[in-house]
Length: 522
Picture 1: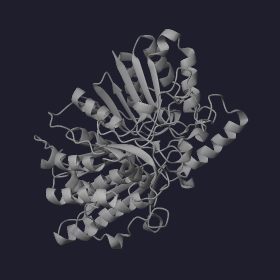
Picture 2: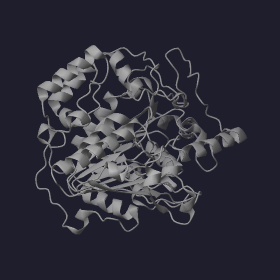
Picture 3: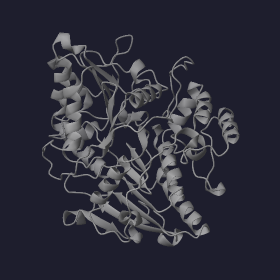
Picture 4: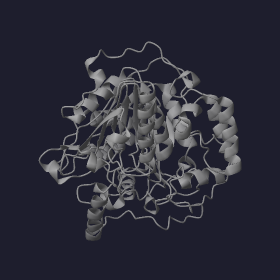
């Protein structure tokens, strides 16, 4: 698992891509020419080079994204020609630059608002990646899980269904029996995360302190992309933890977002606590037997009015609230879907502790549109107002607070945002993936999420989340739905808990346009 900036997650994706033997299927809501996208395209070029050097068969590479096109009114699936996908907006490699890869690209959207919000990857029908981030540069903290075993076949099925067209050429492994894995490896024994040179990694990690930037653990010039191939064993993880041992270094990395330089002038005001759980963006799971997993998805729906929730994602979320015996934990950038609010209130009324980590100000403009449900501040204040005093204590709401901060930052500042989507029920069952707790994800977008039943893994997930943010320490909202500091002062840039009226609706239309352009909360 990764809980970090977008480029750090994409590095892992790139490392998996360059080791592909037969095929890759990559799906993202929004692909944008960016530093993150360049890591993927560099990996594609390197993969093509490696295939040529070993005289191997061409890799079949399928890529799906959602970039609105008027033609999708007639046909939701549009095959993208090379002259379009190599243009400035996307900048994928031209076929002549990757002679050993057969690349096919599809642009998928179901008008009006049926967004292809899915973000996942399947490599060689053996490895699955499910993440919260798109392929673009943003200041968000994101979450990604790397899965193997039978669940990958479910992800493969989703990919085939989503593609919805005849493939040219077809995926080679589609006509072969499902791969069966009997043994699974962890830590440095795993081929995707094995250490090639531990000593080199330690030296490079040490240099991180001196140079005050994220170490470069190899690049295309030496035949290795990114950091994860040589970094993701526990020995190197420990070295990395030791090198995030000052708040200045954490701030620098969060601000630079791994060299994307989106907002280098952001400063942190938190004091480094050596006794606190270490900042560790790479979560290496302990060895374990296979655990129950299932995908809980929803298909896209273009109609802009609220629709049914009788789909796997909606059923899973609602069941989490209904059958929880002790606790429900959610982290989501936005929360306003009509079904989730009464589910939260009902759980609180029967004594369940519901903890919400939300962003303040995330995509507020878009959430002010009619039928969208309102901003996080509006929703939280309304929920507290509807709970009796004896039940308010069961609802614990926190505004996301960056690891180097002592107070939440409004997401409109684009400095410390969180785009993680996760639900954990009774510290045992977790749902992680693409789906937010907002109207768009509940009623309109295509979403892909994995549900996992394992107390051990859930503890690792939750511990990792809290280690990489200060939300639990500084983000608690008071029982009237307003955050205040120790002196009783609210945030100066808080959006407020009242409805926006006509002005809010106008802002909402701007937010909707931003979403289509990839600037909103997708």
